[in-house]
Length: 68
Image (cartoon, rainbow, N blue to C red):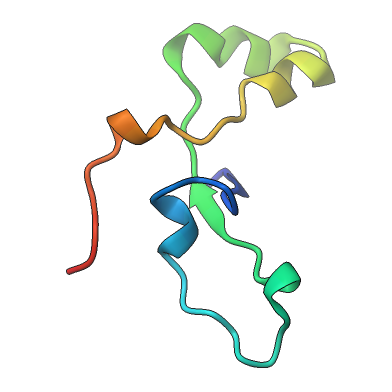
């Protein structure tokens, strides 16, 4: 499962409970990501830079979610 930092994402940054033992700058928020179909070749056979560029948190418009 691929994850990426989501500290600045408007929805995904609120998905994990804070750890009271850690300061705010160490509260790394993670989001599961998928590789877009157009990026599969770069992920599997491209350079490291090309693979890294395919790792992005989905745009907020593509996610439907909120508190339960």
